[in-house]
Length: 196
Image (cartoon, rainbow, N blue to C red; front, side, top):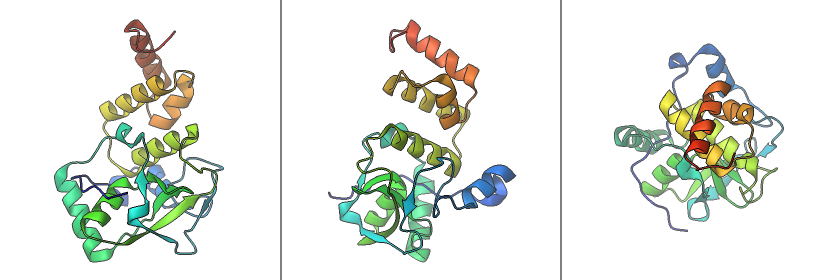
C-alpha cells in the first residue's frame, strides 16, 4: 500500500498539560508497553524493538472516526520525527493494520522512512474485532486533546456503528458521561439513525 501524505498529526501530549491520572496512565506500561486502558489485550514488539516497513502498514478502515489534527500540529510532528525519529511506536495488528499512530505513520511516509517501530497486538489479527475500534478511540482520547464535542461525535459514531453497544460501554471508551451517551442515543433513535 502506498503511504498517503495527509496534513495530520498525532503528537503525544506533554505530561505537564495533562491531569495527573491521565499523565501517569500514558506513561504506565500495560502488557508490554503502549497506551493503557484496554486491559487484557496482549502487546508484543516493544521490548524487541520490532520495526515494520511503512509500505506494508495500512490505516484501520474506521480510522476516520477519530478526528484529524490541525495542519500546524502535523507539521510540528513531522519536524519532531525528522529530528528524533518515532519515539512512541505505532500499535498494529498482526496483519499490519494501524490501531494507534496513523498520523505518525503518515509523517514517516512523508519524510521517507522505510520502517517504523511498532507494538503488535497479539489478540487482534485483522483489526475487525470490535475491541479494535474501542482501542483506537481510547488511545486517541488519551494521547490527544480532544474537545468534549469531538468526544460526543465519537460516541455518536460508535452508537451508529454498533447500536448493541451499551451506553456504559460507549461512555467508558469515549470519556463522556453515561447520561450524555443516553441522550445522544435518544436523539439518533428519534432521527431513525439507529433502531430502538
